[in-house]
Image 1 (cartoon, helix red, strand yellow):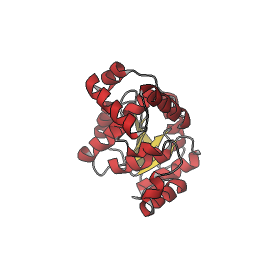
Image 2 (cartoon, rainbow, N blue to C red; image 1 turned 60 degrees about the vertical axis):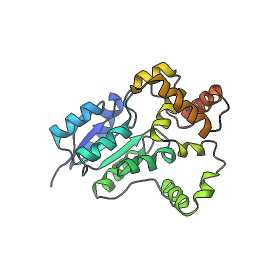
Image 3 (spheres, rainbow, N blue to C red; image 1 turned 120 degrees about the vertical axis):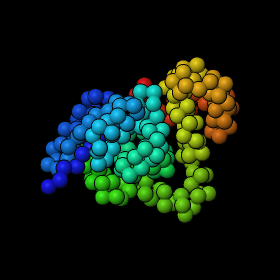
Image 4 (tube, one colour; image 1 turned 90 degrees about the vertical axis):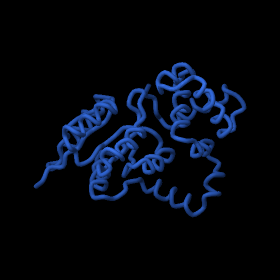
Length: 224
C-alpha cells in the first residue's frame, strides 16, 4: 500500500510532535518533515515532495496566508490543509481564496483532523458543517450576513493585511513593532490603522485596540 507523505508547518514543537504522532499512528501516513517558518517550509517541500501540507496560519511573525499564496505559483498542485486556533468563520473563506483546500481548528478531535486530511487528499474541500452552512447562507443572502448582530462581523470586510495588523494590535504591538515585523513603513501602518477604524466603526485608536484585544480573546488565540 502506498505511503502518503505529509509535511507539517507549525512553529510550536510540542503541538507539532503531538500531531505527528497522531498522523503516524495511521499505517499509510508518514510525516516527512516539520517546518517552523515559511523558508523552512519551502525548503522542505523541495526536499521531501509531500503529498499534502498541513499548515498553521501564524508562524512567529510570518503569515501563513502569504505562504499559501506563494505556493500557488511554486507548487500549485500541492494540497494544503490549514490547522489553526483562529476562529474558523473569520479565516476559512480567506484560506480557500488563497489556495488552500481546507480549514480545521486545532480544538477538533484527532479523528476529525484525520478525516480532514483524508478529505483534502481526495481532492475535496474540508470545512466544518457550521462553516459550510454559513458560507451557503452568505452566498444566498449576503446583505443579511453583513448586517449580522455579531460584533466582529465587520472583520469580513478587512483585507488579509488589515486583519494581520488588527491581530498584532490585539497582541499589544505598537506601530513601530508592527512595521518591523511586517517589514513595511510606520506611515503605511498608520494608513492601515485609519482604514481599520473606518471599517470597524472605531472612533479612535483606543477603541480599535480594545476591539482587537476582545477579538483575540474571542478567537481563543494567544500566541505571540
